[in-house]
Length: 345
Image (cartoon, rainbow, N blue to C red; front, side):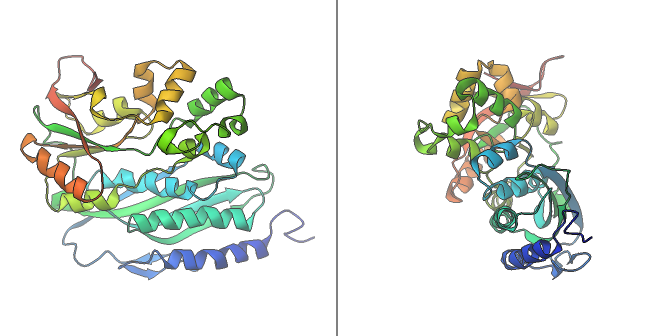
């Protein structure tokens, strides 16, 4: 018997590595000493850092993958994978340095895997992060044919004196939001339940085309997570940002408090930004309460920045010049005893 008889195709794995290498080369940056192909990738922290602190993050794509399988859309879930980790480490002021991925499947389809990794490389390029390694695991009987799982790992660096931790946030500070592209990669177990209730299947839902500028339903529901790295890192060169929150699982209500002092409350004004049509549809078809929407989804705001009122206009201007569409969405106030730390009004 051979390994291939047992369900593992070494030749397919080698072919995938050959397809991946040029994708990874596109992401190379200062610091990479050795990338894909060795037992471990080597990276040297750039010498411009005086007191570098490493910041790490890991995440996956979650059940959004089930929609990717059903729709055959494998090109952008890699962007989701990168964004979920690099946006996380960004909130502490970290510049993403390198990224590693883990792709697991029951039977390796080289074309599908290459499309996924192509998306990962695109996400790395868009965030200035080097794809220097990873793992492709072909495990028969662990996953059904046509399905796979993804995990990603990002490492970044920030000067010790420039770490953003939210400690200086105080009543009177301004809350600025950066738009999301949709649900990003969170809340998809609920998204799928709403689809089942409304249309019966994702294939029936994909035939709908009433999402305006978002395109078809499939375009809206599979829109990749936005990468905020480059505009925010540029902003940090000019404006003092006191705190940031990446709005992922837990939505606005549970992510903003992660950077607030206990004595502060963020009051967000719902009419200060435009909510993508996907969220209006989800709330209507799923009969979802406002609080549940704000606790599960980003509802149109993918990144929150908190600055002093004196810096608010400068922050808005710099982000606009970088191609973003920032919105002043709220204010920090003194928190009453027992009150929630984030309130959407």
